[in-house]
Amino acid sequence: MRILVFFDLPVATKIQRTVATRFRNFLLKDGYHMVQFSVYARVCNGMDDVEKHKRRLNLNLPPNGSVRMLIITERQYESIAVLVGKLAPEEKVKPYEQLSIF
Image (cartoon, rainbow, N blue to C red; front, side):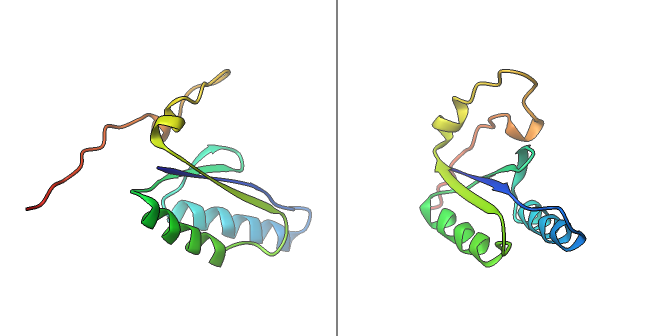
């Protein structure tokens, strides 16, 4: 599964830019990668992991602006069509192996 976070934050004042940078840095430290400006994605292993990162996201939301989250499956994410530009190295689909421990 993947979490996509879309945001539009005000950056007119120095304080607003600081808040926006702090939010972006949180996303990067929490394992998200930039897909486009103000669009970040993160791989999650199931709904429990999604809920954990959703709670973390809610704890780090900026006071103003617009932040949205979309949860999609890997199969849905693979269907993204790049119309102009190239896929970033982080976006390329990597085969995931499931580990079984007995």
